[in-house]
Length: 367
Ligand code: KG4
Ligand code: ZN
Image 1 (tube, rainbow, N blue to C red):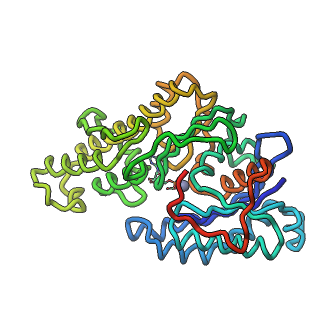
Image 2: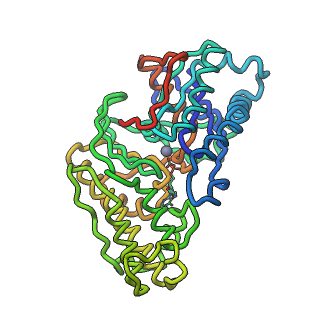
Image 3: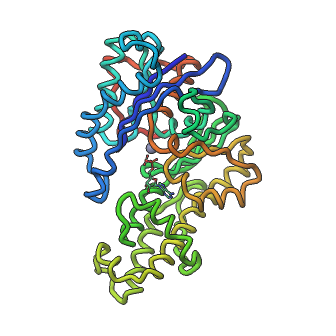
């Protein structure tokens, strides 16, 4: 079975072809093509929904075309659609205008080429990226894939710019959301603290790079206490960073955050980065450990851009009694391959297909 996956929920336009053999949980990547508007958006310090949506409109057809071209290089364009069994598309959660571009494109293609259409939950897809364990010959050198697919029960931690969730799967399509952030996603909090430090968007990776040169115990930013064993919050720690920075330069609470960076010393910035990164990562790792003890999963998997964090990997390795097989980071950030992979499992497990004349976007879709 081969599925074309389409992703356009935020600032990446991406399409991919993934193959799943009968009776196997090892998905094979045939192609993935991603066009990002992140450089365009950097000038604005974050995602501007209108700009992201326009950029999807410009990119989506060339991206799909190239994904098919790379998956089936020896097949003429007219024959490529015969090799696709279904189309999968992210219909939520995400930005309304961005989701619409992907969903309307997928609906049109499904009707035109008479293919089943699967609506995909973006957050579930982040976890399903971990089932990609093989790649077509031409791609194999570019991807460092886990050797084996995850086993159930599977504990999934999603840590991205838009989502932070902890989920337990007993089997395919049998899962329970344990908890999530009640305010900012972890990546969003990284990006905001990076901004206080004067680092350009998306600042998360730059903040992480700065952290090792500071003292992770210079400041004790509080871990928020919230309702629900597995829920957490990042708005409290983020405000604590703001207050600490204001105090360090001898200013009050009304001192604007965008002016802090020019007054903080390099050493102070490094200490803020180190202390915040440690606390934010501890917050999600504490919950992951708690869930591990309660549910005794066979596998722990991670999805989302913050999975690139060395501090996250270090803390998990220190505390979990089992090791984690990390997916290649290119498949952990937003991409069409994770969407195609979940589509394959949906089709194989007899999950209902969507009506291509009716599939609607769901910007606030939850798990
Ligand atoms: O999964 P992703 O590409 O997009 C969303 O679905 O949001 O995640 C992007 C987020 C950004 O907030 C970015 O700052 C963060 O992931 N990020 C990192 C690192 N690399 C990316 N955060 C911490 N450490 C990193 N190394
Ligand atoms: Zn995402």
